[in-house]
Image 1 (spheres, rainbow over the protein chains, first blue to last red):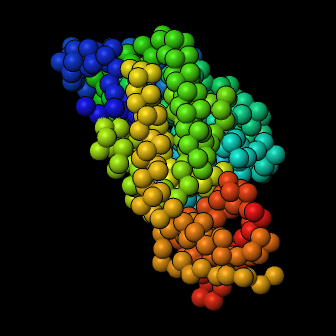
Image 2 (cartoon, each protein chain N blue to C red):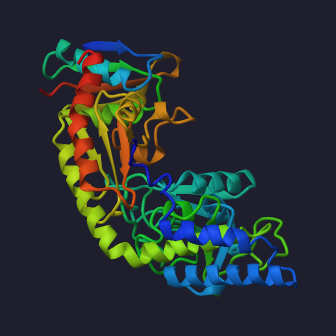
Length: 365
Length: 77
């Protein structure tokens, strides 16, 4: 049996989503744009999904668009704000620790003649508020997906129209104020994969950067995944209803893990220890190769992620750890699922010192 | 300041250059300088991180022959 500690890559489907998904697959197949009975059913389900998502996130229903992924919602959000503000400039400024989807959107914008720059972060991964002042659009995450640090979004939003990637935090933490557009991803809160959420504030200057379509709402493209959206909304409602209890438990478990790991020699535990996401932590072991430790833990039944170069398809270390000046090799990111208990964490803490010591010994240290 | 010892880690992937640095730190006297030639991009972050974690002084990087970065470290203890 595998101990799953990689919910930041994908949270297991929430039980509330499973029940809704099964029902919705039977009733939500039709095109919500059509005028017949099955279509009306699908349209009602889509409208319900939108209303429930809006309520759970504290926004208006007409600010919610379902997309085929969180990444697509990020691309629409970043590039759509740039398109909407094109008259005042073409300079995108993103924090240096944004998710790869934001960085890819920035390079795409640059390849089309726009300007793209990043702002530095401190050693905890927090965006430095005294950075670039020339932004046409700012892109800053609600909280970092690798190290958990919460960003000063409301403060930064006073300086320029702001796109907020909320994929790591949506559902778990209330959305901060001030953003013009935002993105979230259902599979990170226990909804199905393939459902992203684009939020565009009423009155924000946003223009579709892509060809567009003729769907239920002007910002979406292609046939809506009605069952997926409804299941995502059900999971989101459940996560929001449970979050006081779940967050407190997960926050304490991560504290326990941070303290236990810090006791292993030559280990760096990174990210803000307090102002952070409740469910994840990143740490790095000197002289340890990331691929070896992920493989060794997998053999012992622990599923964890790593930001080290040898575990990445690009062979480049995590740009988040690099921007923070944190050790990039021997890196692990542990993220708790809803059902993770103290026993899981204690089992991990029981094996880690030995696994690390053996890898170091094999390296001749 | 010239180096007391230069480690050729070209072609080695992290963490190997850092492991070599740790193994050979004792080969230079306290106050001496050890340099690492490394073309793995992770070394740019990991050499200064190692210095911070191990209490050694990171002196910076410069390009050696062929454009390979040479990272320089002063042994403090």
